[in-house]
Image 1 (spheres, rainbow, N blue to C red):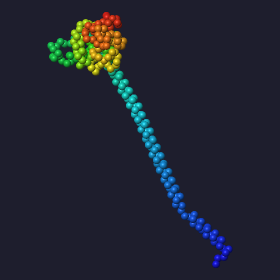
Image 2 (image 1 turned 90 degrees about the horizontal axis):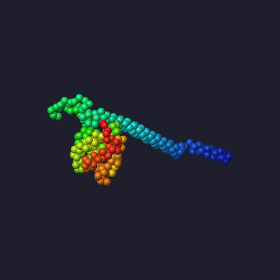
Image 3 (image 1 turned 30 degrees about the horizontal axis):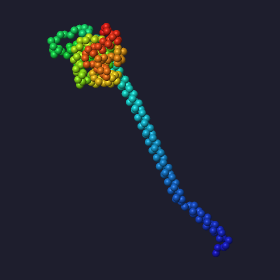
Image 4 (image 1 turned 90 degrees about the vertical axis):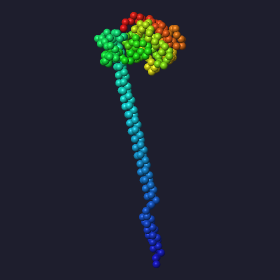
Length: 278
């Protein structure tokens, strides 16, 4: 039998044992929440690392694109510079060649020994024919139907260079291969002795089809054809030289050689080049 005075001590021991047993049990819910938090933190870090890698990749791609664009532009500029330089050298060489050879075939032939006389062009070797025309650019001998008795510049650019170098006015004929009015004018122009005489004081250029310049400067009152323009020795289109006998709406249209010769004399009087010697 337990005494009454021992009952409080027994109850105290029992409560202590219960408390010790409760503290020794594992706290399962707390551990699960902790593991869940750690897992979420790791996942967040992985996501952040992935986003950082994506941003770095995008930055690298942007830097590469900018570098490639800059190098591409620089290469294009160098290529265009070399191309323009070669074009200028080609035009200068053709202009110098024309200046050395003179304004007509007779002057060019007089500057070198005469070629051997052949019975016909068919019996002459190719080397002899090439030596005969070596002073002339092949493009400069394209009369396009306006007569091979004139000395034609190979292009508008070379004509401008020759004109400014020799201080001569430039005569520009713009026409098309399919134009009926152009076809009617060609034989009249080619057979006109008056125009042939006056042309010695001009640099002659005729531009057909795609050779027509795109600038509106060469179409003062429209892009009709044919039209004949005159350029001053300084290389500027002279809008005052027009066909006084023609239409007021098509001032630069000529249908008769007499009209062209009249404008040519007006140009020579304006720039005081009547007695200009080549």
